[in-house]
Image 1: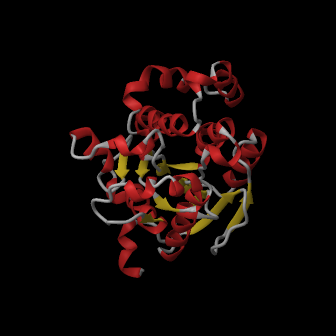
Image 2: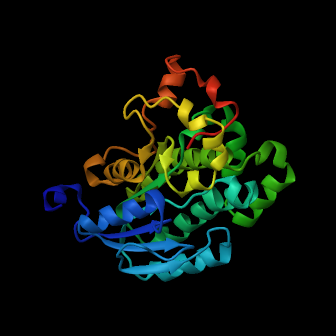
Length: 281
């Protein structure tokens, strides 16, 4: 892919969490093909070529800090791609929150001293977070809790309103964190922080959620641009493009990569009634 050297990854150091499967694996693979030095962090062994692999469960905060400390020795790190994420069907809502938001935020914040000024961070949220603005007040309460153990205790105090399914809330928290933290990171260090919001995508997430397929949820989903579910590679490219230096004026952004679903719902072009309470990804 030498014709894509202008994206700015050739010879750069990249860290990818969740790089052993799904969208994260495709991000790691593409970055390698673009000439980057890729370091993967995941609970499962890496399946694509990489410069190093660090095993880490993002729900284990001590392990998260240790992983970040190990990778900090690589510095300066040019790009960070937090791609790890899962559904509540794996180990329940609380574990989902620990991995998707609390552990992810802890990892990034622990690694930040090793990220070069002017670097870029791009993570994966979901179009399940499309209603985040209606919940901003409560999300800001959690955002103010920087300590991961305190944040975990906070959601456990009132799980019916603060945790819910663990998935939508964690994905909304990522959006709020990105929007808020990007300002300080930009002003102080010119580091950009962005997120994408995928639609149904063929990954292990859906393999772990068979009820979505059996319920007819996926068949009923509108696919305006592709006419089918997106692939992991089709989500990896927008994330990589978003983090590229070519998008130097873009930060604090939540980019919908959902075939027009969210904006279709916002404008009435799509009726979300088919969802019947299920959360899109």
